[in-house]
Length: 167
Image (tube, rainbow, N blue to C red; front, side, top):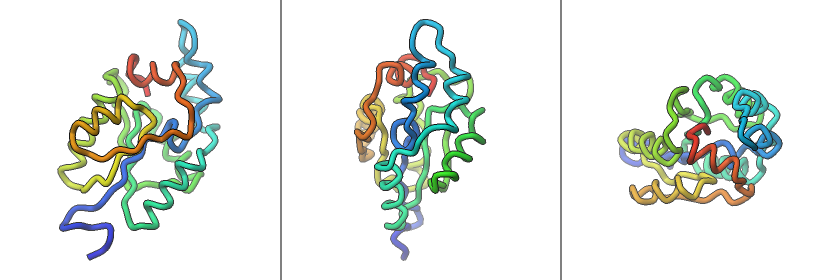
């Protein structure tokens, strides 16, 4: 039996993107003030620097034989740009779950729903996220969590994730 499989279920690490492997600080100015420019915010994602700590975490999990599944609040319409960015930084995963374009639920609600579906067919070793509200909701379901503390979380990003349901 491989290290990646326990029974018939793959062992996966679920990883958020923004604030975990992608440094979004250079584009947060698009979310400040009353007139947020969501298109400009997302259009600039291709310029995100990689966060070395997140990249190392993914590489370590992969080296241990775990699958990598990305779970992001980014809208589905940005899938191609997201996949391109991940590949450019050596962060390919086994799957990518994105927020449906019209879904404005808080990240904690959206992500718990996806994790429940994933748990029916895989052993989730942990969710790595930069959002404490997401991690608290996930921990309440019994899934292990890890807080990505390597990028300071700003008020615009917190609001986008939890109040506005945008990322």
